[in-house]
Structure formats: structure tokens, C-alpha cells
Length: 222
Ligand SMILES: NC(=O)CC[C@H](N)C(=O)O
Image (cartoon, rainbow, N blue to C red; front, side, top):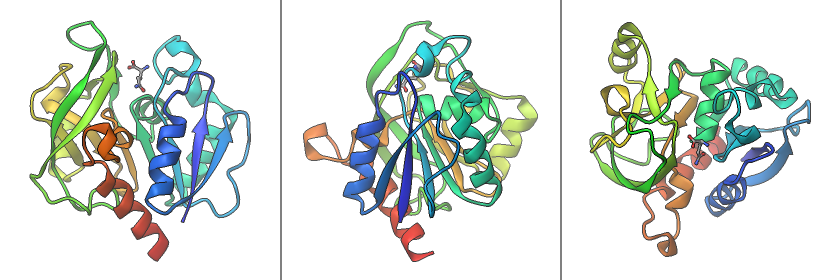
């Protein structure tokens, strides 16, 4: 299974994400945002956290216009898998690969702590390693994590089982406690918490391992 981890100016979780993917068995290529094509045979595009372009304009807005994002959109259009974590989730909403927007946290401040989450669906290649309703603990670190969409869109996401994770205690004002959502074909996942920071006992927890293992396992078998 081959994963492409994108690197933008200001990405700072790209190497953590590569480590988590490699530990789960993926072959990883780091791909610079100015590249125009993904490596041949890329199964998964992984968009990491950080502060792409210093979060200017809006988090992820400039990164979404990068040359590589045209190739990412084409990959998603072909039914390819895409994972966006934190700033990566913001990039995917700016690209409109996922619905909704990430606004400034309701409390205005940057929030950096570990957070309890509830897995809302195990029906995706990203969440198949968990059970529905399972509680997991991932770190969060963001100032624009306040997920917002129209009431109709939120009803649709919930109705279609596309809310992947919710917060047990909402840290940022996100509508309906949403921490992560899936695309219509369930092959694009964006989430604000950081599963790649919960894959080693030294991290204080390993609840993120199941996400990378189930994803790599599903794509290796495909
Ligand atoms: N950890 C991150 O990716 C942070 C994303 C973004 N810079 C924010 O603060 O909201």
C-alpha cells in the first residue's frame, strides 16, 4: 500500500504522519505541494496538520490552491482514498472534497490537549478497526476547529452515517460535536484530532493505531 504525504510550507505534522503510516505497513512518499502529479500507484493521499502558508486568509485556503491539489482532486474523483488531519481537514473542506467549514474555536483560543472522542461509524476503511460507540483518546491542537455546516447538511451527514467521530466534551463549539466527517463515497475522511499523535506508548496512548492499521490493511487487500 502506497501513501503520499503532502508537504506545504508550514506543515508540521507531516513526518509524524509518515511515521504512523509506515508503522502500519505503508510505503510512504513525501510529496511537495508544488509537484503536479502524485507518485505512480498512490493508494492514499494523506494531508497533514500544521500551519500551511501561516494560516493566512483562512486555514487551508491557500494550500487548497497548490498545484498538487489538482492531482489530489483527480485522485478523489477516481475513488481514491484521502485522509486529512487538522490542517489537512481544513484543506479538504477548502477544496470542497468534504462539506462544511472549520471556523475559529468558539472560545477564540488555541486548544491543545487530549480529548475523548466517540467513534460514530465503523463503516469505512478508516474506522473499521473500531466499533461504533467506542470511546478513543486523541490529542487536539488547533484554533480553527469549530466545524460548521447548514442544518440540512448536518442532518444529511448524520442520516448517511458520515459523522466519523464526535467529541465527548466539545472543545471548540463544533456543530453537533462533530470532530470528523466522511465523504459521500466514504473514501475521504477529515478530522481535527490527531490520531498520528496516538500510535506509540510514548505518546501516552495508542488509540490512533487502529485507524492506520485498518486503512493500510484495506488498501493492501484492494
Ligand atoms: N494542528 C493543526 O493542524 C492546526 C491547524 C490550524 N493551524 C489551526 O490552528 O486550526
